[in-house]
Length: 183
Length: 415
Image 1: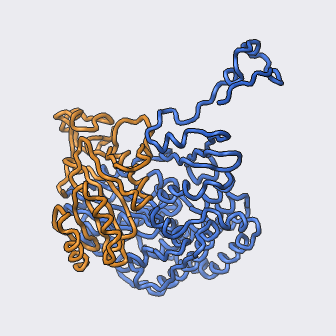
Image 2: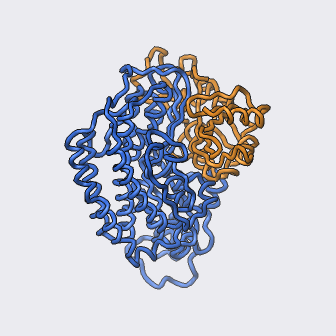
């Protein structure tokens, strides 16, 4: 944990954050709205006392109630990983600005998040499927997508929607969705 | 496609019914080959790529091509022998490990990770166990950490030896791969004695490792260490003094350090551009802060620099193994943990330095016995992305050298 980083983040980005800075082990976590992503990441990249120049990871997350895009950043100014969570994307139509203007290498990671969750990254020049075939219709890592041989899960909710429902509009009341308690 | 010229064909195509009909063009007789993709382009970039200008054509390399290191398919737009543009097509090895991991309990997920990076599979297990240990707030015994580093560095040597050998093999040199396999076989046998498996070790456990060092492993290791340095150097003189090999690689696929960072590169490929970024030092994990080793870098950033850098890294790994053997403490190799793990709700990210670069795992726990989200970050995935920058203007045959110098593992790329 790096308390100095927490103070710097609160001082510089306090008005952008939608929650408190959380710190645990060697990780610092901030949450922002999806519209603020380009501005916040640009500030993290450019500010001389932040200097987050290395994008360690870009992941999509489906919490069951909303979509998130999670960025992990590395800087030589702190011993912590910085986790930036763009929170509260609409699960029906998740959209977030692309960060390929900062890290061109994010292009394929954004394609992967689009492929697996259906998150649309505005500004990515090549947003198409990357692992699944181009005519594939659903988004496999969403929580309302079940594996055919998903024996680990209780069938208590009745009929399982497999490879079909990709938004709550298609889901029935019997669709089993695992929702995060982690938030 | 061009239209048929008015002049009659200079040759006969026998036994084709439409051959007599002068209105049937040659293309119709032979069948017109539509350019891939079979589906309408979805993005501007895709539409631009699949539009051919005068003199250009598309060819496929892979997915089953011996030099693609797995099942990578690359659609190349070529003009003559020169590559104009590329479109790597992934997914031929996609197994959905992230989804499988969400439906397995914490211990089971680790065995699903081995086949990702099948050449150096301990490095896939490592970030996952670190992330889980962070979720569980558990401390790993120091002896277990040393064993992890020891086996990891052995595997790094094995992986680099293969990378160097296959680099030569892709350029047509058969001999170096045979010497590389001598080293690799010895290391694989060693690790088989330690872990019980030859390839997919499944050795790291949450809170430690599966078993302590044993006599066979130690005796094999001591035997090998006594001749390893000389052996590695002798093997590599085969290549780095080879005129053809050096000339084909020098200046090929040159990457500058700013672009490499913007492309999210890591590992030897990034260090070959002059950035001394190694997670063992940049974000230390395990017992690496206690070990003394250098981070070799090179300035050129071309295929030859990436090759030579791997040789330097092998020497540093030998140093680390030596120190591990001398500093290895006594004690248990597993922390005391329940059989069924239910971490508190939370999020954890861990990344380690694999032979290819940063291997990361991001795990979310929701309090049940299965991870709620399990994300794998693979370095080769990002290295392949740079083909579009490095390849245009070179010849088709140079792609084999470039691909081998980037050293991708398709199991990890496709997940």
